[in-house]
Image (tube, rainbow, N blue to C red; front, side, top):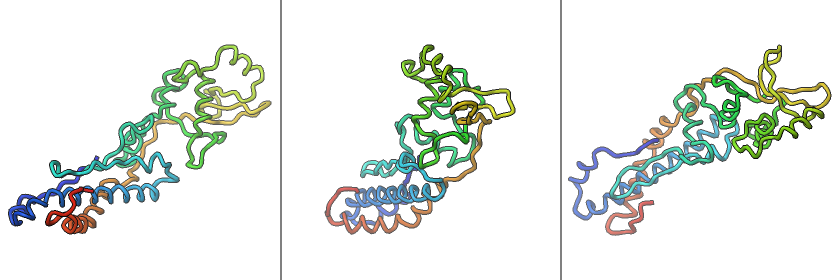
Length: 244
């Protein structure tokens, strides 16, 4: 979360006329809010340059809390209830660096005993990826169902379905360990052909890729004075009093 405040307001207020003093909270709130919106737009542009095909989910992960005349602070922060995973949970390591956290389906596989707690996954050669390079949701659902790891017990395969799948073999996901092949989840495609879908790996660590705070400071230095002048022109002398 990034909070934008202005130092020196009291000294500036002391030098202003009574009319200007009355308008100053509106001018400042406007400038802070507009600058925060500028920061959010630039952060989005930076995401597009540092990430490989970021999803709309990621690009829309930032939220602006506007400043008001009572609270002269605008906030740019990551959305909390953002789908099934708070945005900061998976973008935080990209901002600060550090270890990756488990994804929701990985936690489900761990709870079911399919993976160890210190294991993570990367897509295998047989994984079906979407346009952003991520595992397709439908395939994740089938893997969890066939391995008895779905958070919804109704979606897990019954024993009868498992026996039928074992007889045909085709399209069956299974866990392979202790062979020359990497440990992970594999798919039997037909006959003796199997392909890796999820490979189990140690916990990945991220380097800092998303300069969130540096970007905010740069945009603030470049835009706040201009936004403040806009606010003066908009609000000084009793003009409209909507902050943004």
